[in-house]
Image 1: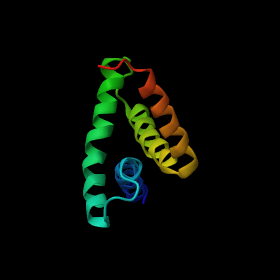
Image 2 (image 1 turned 135 degrees about the vertical axis):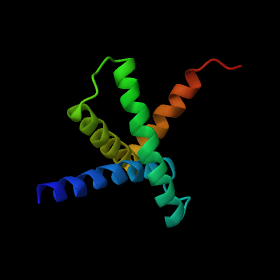
Image 3 (image 1 turned 180 degrees about the horizontal axis):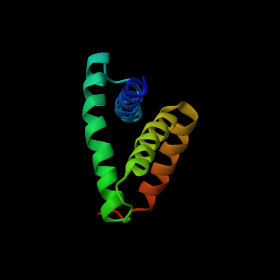
Length: 104
């Protein structure tokens, strides 16, 4: 019974991570099949790169807790960023940062 719950929770975290990232990057521009495909791709790419970054650069060891924290963070933050009040704040921040960059 515990193994079944672990499988369900793991798949929900795995797929939810990619789905929330796809919501953040593509709020309304894509249909359901594209969103599911991108969700599976993002579920593999983003957590892997984030875990490698935290291990190599921040010297955080790879263990169960760090992996769960990475997946939960990559699920919650993009989901919150895809909501309208946060999205408008983020876009204003990016515009402000873009204006501060030197022009080439």
